[in-house]
Image (cartoon, rainbow, N blue to C red):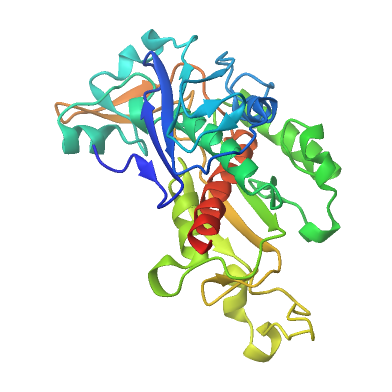
Length: 350
C-alpha cells in the first residue's frame, strides 16, 4: 500500500490500524535543537481523542504518545523521530457483522477490490483513527514554526452557520464548548442539533474554518507546489473531507475583478484579503484562511441497504461507537495538517 508518507522536507510516515495493537509514525526532516514541549503535544492529543464529550464516539482511548527516537534531553536531534500510540479500547466484535458486507459510502468495497483483502474491524487503515499520528506530527511541526499561529474552529454543522467573519470571533472561546465553535449562540444550537441527530441514529456533516497568522512572505513555489495546492491536498487527505476553499473561495466566482482585487498599502500589505493570504501560490504575509467541508459520517445506527460479497443487497444496521458529527474532533486534525504544510514550506524556503 502506497501513500503513507506526507511532506517533502518535513515528512511523516504513519502506520497502524483502528483495531490493531498500536498506531504511530516516523517524522523525518525535523531540524535539530528544537526544545519540545511534550505537554503541548499531549494537549493536542487530548483535543482529538475519542470519548471527550457526549456528542462524539464513546470509545475510550487515552491516546498517550510514546516517543522512541530522535529526542535527547528534551530536544530534537535531527534524526528520525519515532513514536507510537497504543490501542487499548478496541471492540473488534462490534464489526463481525460486516465481515462479508460492504457498507455504503465506506472504503470497504474499494479496499477489497484493490488489495484482495481488508481489515473490516473499524475500517482498518481507512479508519479516521489513523489521524492520531497526524496530530502528533502536527504538534511537533507547530513547535518548529512557533511564531506562526494556526487556529481552526467549527464554522457550521448541518444548516447552522456562524454568520460572522473570523475577525469578529473570540478564538479563546473555541475550547469552551464541546463543538469547538467560538460563537456561543451558534455553539449551543449546534450541540443541541448533534444530540438530536444522535438520538435518531443518524449523522450530520459540517465545516471547519482555519486561520493561519504571522506567516512570512514567500512560502510556496510556483506552478505545481503552490502553497494553497499543498494545503488543499493536506485537507482533502483527511477522512470524510469533501471540499476545500481558501480566501474568497467559491463566492469569488460571483464577483467582478474590481470588487475582488486586493489593493496594496504602501508597506506591501493589502486593504482587503480576498486572496486568502496567498497570491501566485506564494504567501503574501496576510492571514491565510480556508474552509474544509466534512460529509456526514457514513456509519449509521439505522437500518440501510448493504452489498454482500456474493452480490446480494440486504438490510443491515450499524453497530459500535461512532461520531454523530465528526467536525468537533477534526479541528486539531485540520490544524495539524496545516502545520505540516507550513513547516515543510518554511524549511524549503530556508
